[in-house]
Amino acid sequence: MRRSVRVAYDPSCIQKALDRGAKGIQVPMVNNREDAEKVVQRVKFPPLGQRGANYTTRPARYGKDHGIGFLDAADDQTLVIVHIETPEAVANFEEIVSVPGLDMAFIGPTDLSISMGYKEEGARHPEVQNVIAQLRERAQQQNIPLGNIAANPASVRQELENGTAFVAVVITSVMMSAFLEVVEAGVRKD
Image (tube, rainbow, N blue to C red; front, side):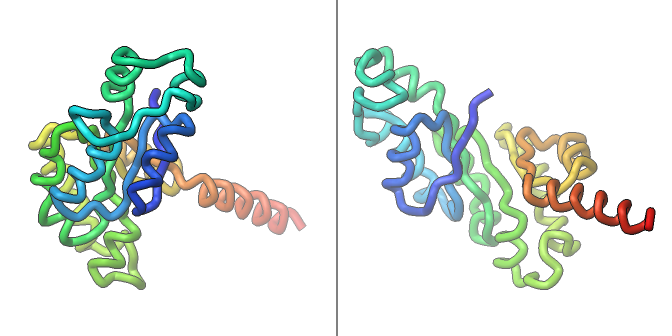
């Protein structure tokens, strides 16, 4: 299982995360093909990209790994995920996911709902759910794995049943939900 790190919009954050040992990156707010190409350029070593090599980092075992073997393995094994979080990204979905070197698209349902104008209703709004369902179909047509967020065990199951390849769980939501159940059970006993 490759673990990915969500990085900031700043392209230098990609290099820093990978040099610290991340096996993959998730980049928010990728809205078009050019944005996706820039992400891949920052992750891959030349000639596939423009990532700078540093053999004194943790991933290179502080100088024990180097050269073509290390570079090729990093290019092949680093997971590249872009977030689809705006109507612009939804409109450009096919051109975004067609970028060579991209491994997965990830729906950011909260940002997507806000950018669609549903600040109050959020991702539960029917129009947002419709867009997410369309993205699932489009991802299947493009043969690109799709990720999404789940807030509880039931939604994890639902996402997996819907064909979502990568389900992120908001652990603070799960912990708070479990905490509230314990509190409510304690209150009911009194």
